[in-house]
Every structure is written in structure tokens, then in C-alpha cells.
Length: 70
Image 1 (cartoon, one colour):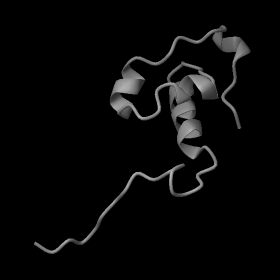
Image 2 (tube, one colour; image 1 turned 30 degrees about the vertical axis):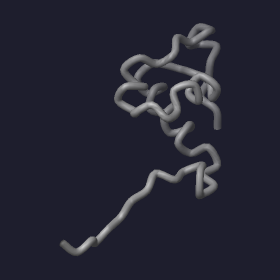
Image 3 (spheres, helix red, strand yellow; image 1 turned 60 degrees about the vertical axis):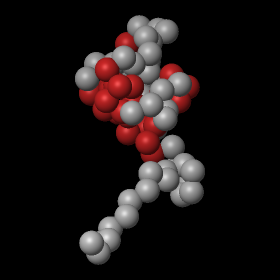
């Protein structure tokens, strides 16, 4: 079998990603009505995304007081 493509998850480890994964996840959660902080997302980094999204951290403040960072 000839290997045609190899993909590594290296954002933030090998390649500077400027927190793109964190921002992307926060934007997706915000679109679903859940606002969380950068630190709350970092708590679930490394956990498979479907698992992390299924049980996101509870926001500490009401939605209207929170904004996704950008």
C-alpha cells in the first residue's frame, strides 16, 4: 500500500495557530447559544471534540454579559 497523505494534529504544538482552535470552538458554541471563556475551552483541550462539546463547561456569567473573544 502506497501512503498518499499523512495528517498530524499539530495546531499550537508544532505550528503557531494564534489560538485558532480555541476561537473556532468558542464561535461554534456561541452560534449554538453557549458562551464560554478561553480558559473554559482550554479545560477541555485534548479531549475528543465530540466529547468536549457534549458536556461543555457551565458559563460563570449570563450569556448577555459574555462575548466570544476576537
